[in-house]
Image 1 (cartoon, one colour):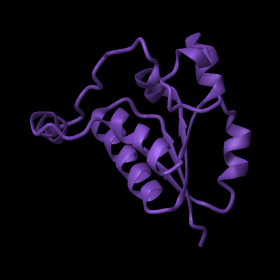
Image 2: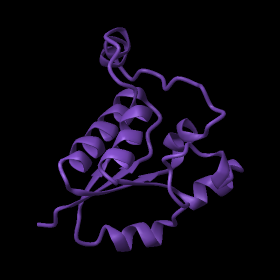
Image 3: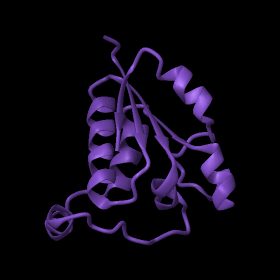
Image 4: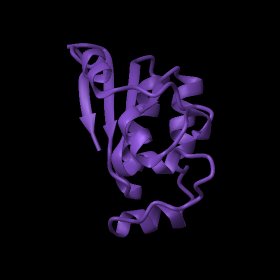
Length: 129
């Protein structure tokens, strides 16, 4: 099995965003190759001007917030800077939302199409959140 992990993030709930960020950051700092594909409801949380909090899906989200667990944005940023993970926004979702590359957080890479992502993920473990 490949040492590469590809994470598809489409959910906009705190717990799913948090788990995706934890998988990406732990794998990246452990030396695994990591590629994260942000799309659909997840993408807006990575636009610089958006300070909206992701809604909790259940009790765990509220508990994490109360315990000051590092935010998913922080973890994704650490995955990119400390572990060299590629955090890539979906080009189609960016078009639909009217978001430009310069609007994204600094750790977000170049917009990527689903075809390219699937090609990169061909021999990798793929996790979906």
